[in-house]
Image (cartoon, rainbow, N blue to C red; front, side, top):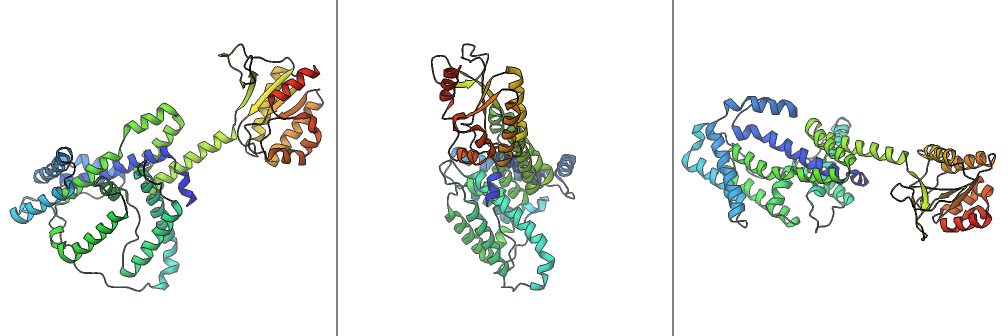
Length: 431
């Protein structure tokens, strides 16, 4: 379930918008009453636009009426069951007025009765397990992404491991009745959520209605125009596309805006799972890049205080001490960035030509072995140039690691300070 933690909020925004566009483009042919061989997203979109002149006017009218009922009732009477009315009216029109004769396609025959139990054929296990693994991964990824995407602020965040267990149990039981693998669907969730679903009770009601439909109402469902079904899905999928959320991300961080765009385009061009995997990979690559190049700030002290901050042209009055260079690296220093941190420290030393370099490690929560070795080698090099290295502000746990290393033995207690203020006082007392 920890994989779900790599789906960031910008990725979710792009994922939802991409899913919305894919759902709408997939339903447009039914809305227009046209047919063509399905392909990828771009192919389907181009084929849809190319087929507009062949649109069925009666089908388009049914689509418009369905959308008008949905949007009109939601605006005029929000508590009315708009989807039921929007679906029921066209079914009644097909039943009573025989509008099918105008070329309006309907769902058609829906099988009735309950499925018979079936025992698995274990001989197929070797042939099916690779595809089954992929289906399971796709199902879980889309389930948890849909769950997080549609969760409101006042609702608990879906627990990935619980969702994983549930998404495994459901198809395992359904398999004995010949059911398709179950999972969370985005278009179904969009319709369900906007219809007012807020708890598992909605699923139980849906299951009960589905059971009643199989046994009693299947002939009526078969009379539903495909255009009506498409119109319902499209109306509730438009809400997934929120340009304002993209703009809000862009105003804060352009990098994460790119993640959202990658998820958006990836879902459209590659499909649901592949698109979100690409977005996650891009997110991880961007994070790796950020971690591999941590900042190392040159510090100065705000005059008259014990506040140390990055030296800046905005604060020309901040105090600096001749011969003392104060540096503050940030984040975890480990094998992926230790060499880069060393380069930045050496550049700062070459520019300042100090007698003492104080590394403020208050923002460093961990020093990995490679980082300690790099710092040790740097201290040994600077020792030959009469530049002394001090450490200050070590986080809990870090001092023990430093003392056990060659660096700790070389520095001794006298060059490991409690904080920067202590280091400055010590330096000034010795100067």
